[in-house]
Length: 369
Figure 1 (tube, rainbow, N blue to C red):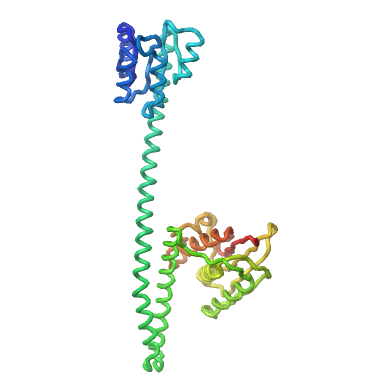
Figure 2 (figure 1 turned 120 degrees about the vertical axis):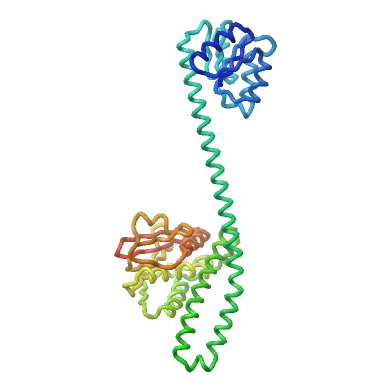
């Protein structure tokens, strides 16, 4: 709708008839005060405003309309037969007008301008509605994300208690004479223990996710020897996977300020992933080097199934899993996300290189200082 503001009724009637003939909805006001009351109640696509009016003139009305948050984007077109000098036209623009026409005006020119301003207003309104819808969607998604994180935190804590009890009972069973002397019994207990370890790792990951999201993941920064970190990690992983060959490439005799336990967590994740995604290979490389910009690079190279290039950018996203038709692997896609957050807290950077059916190289770089 268009609002025409003029103190002369003959002007209001003629201009209203002209616009309505061209299929525009029109409202009118015969004074500045009446116009201000109307713009507070109704949204107009365009305001055609006379300058010379008794009481409050058009410039004062435009300045007030431009100051309202509700009408700040409403276009104002000045129309005047008296104030045609340059100084008045300039004042019209300064008080919030987007155009200034003097009488007598060309009806075709006026119609063209009205159509243009009307269309621009409709586009601005559509954009505003889209922005509001997007804002609501983002707030809705944030609320769901918060609810999900809250559920993960509660569920992981609640699962921890019964898991500890089951682990305790399993250890009691392993000590029974019947278990020690029965190979089948020992096999079953071993498999049960392995599944419990997987469940414990899953719960630990859930707890880490919860701590990351709430900003409560704690770090204990101390001087850490890179060689000691790597040798300890390889020793632990070698005991878990004795059938695999872990080869060291490169050596960095440096000490950095870091949380040794968290960095070991990253390396173990990289190594176990390398094992998981290399079902036909038993060789894993752990490579260390100093980069040209004086950073320590630590990486794990496997010769497994590799990763498609279009999936590489998402590998470290929360809950992201690469699903290939030829291989199916267990996991919720949390490990690499946790690794990314740990590396970030060390002011480091992470990366991956991979070729399908040739293997992958997961690495991270940490500053020496």
